[in-house]
Image (cartoon, rainbow over all chains, first blue to last red; front, side):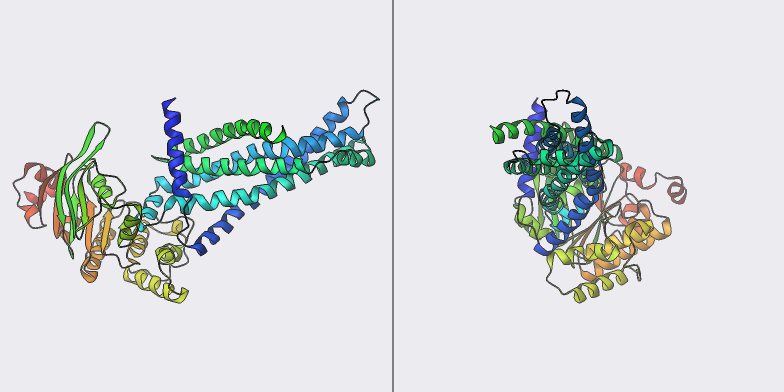
Length: 247
Length: 248
């Protein structure tokens, strides 16, 4: 238990070093665009793939489980929309990104640590925590909502394509379903969660990478720890944020 | 000049550095020698502040480094260049970007001025037309030379080299040694080199400190070391088959 508090303390101290003014604004902007590319655009493929299939599966399962003639088939569209926007896109994609982006951040920074590249930055007088982690956090916070919006759109599209392909629900029913009782607040809720999750993924992974000591084995362990801890924290915050934002 | 006074460093119960008192002179190549695990690298990391000392002080030209805050240290470190054992070049950058990195970070020079400086320091370490190579494309000796170029790009007042010859063949190691010696005299900087290579000691050791089990055991220069009566130092210096035969 003491170890957990010690780790949280180290994390807070590192964040104090991370959230300072960048040494040079131009270098920060350059780093930020590199991170947009590596953390955002390079995740687009996996996000698109998972979202389409997720939406399709939700639609097929819902359609097959509507037995009662009293429930209109438009409920399939409604269910797909609600599931994808409220939970699947922000949380499940958040967990996927924790695996993909989190392991990348932890292994990249961890390798820099064990090969003394971080020491080299420190010796030059560079705030290495700020230089390495801050652009990743900012990039994640800015790019992840965009990924999640794309994921929502593709999830619903996937559901619609599945319904057309299987013939279970007509396009008219599906479209009218996704328009029933739509509240813009659900998008706000999903994007708020996404911003929190983006911060969790990038900061926790950055922390575990930065604190790596040893060699290649420890880099692998740090990467695994980053993914596991980020995922656990995402699940915990999902509950807390849902309680706070939807009640 | 860099001065270490009564430095003690512990890792848990392990007393790694024991009351080290040492002065490293300006314009000289100051060598720290000792067996693996004797505390050389820890001493160097304490001198540059990568490890905090548990007691004692480190001064850079009478500026007490130990009591400096984060910002003061950051400013002082811009006067320090360091060559790490593995080079510590940034993998994601090419040679030119690596050498230009401190210039980008701390100067307001134009891109032309920075390129001119990069080419100058690369030429100084006998490297030309390698600007666009990635670090993974470089040999061990080239990596070390690029690292030296990066370390001297900002005209440092202090240069630290942690085992600059490790992993290099004797000829390339000699080239690196001479380069470090020449740069030290040319720019009149305070250079500290960690090594256990006796060739380095005999070629550039203006001042030599022998660390044994965390203590400063002996201090002298490259001439004194061949005639010392110190048993532990003799065991270290003449510990190999080649050197023991030469002694006989």
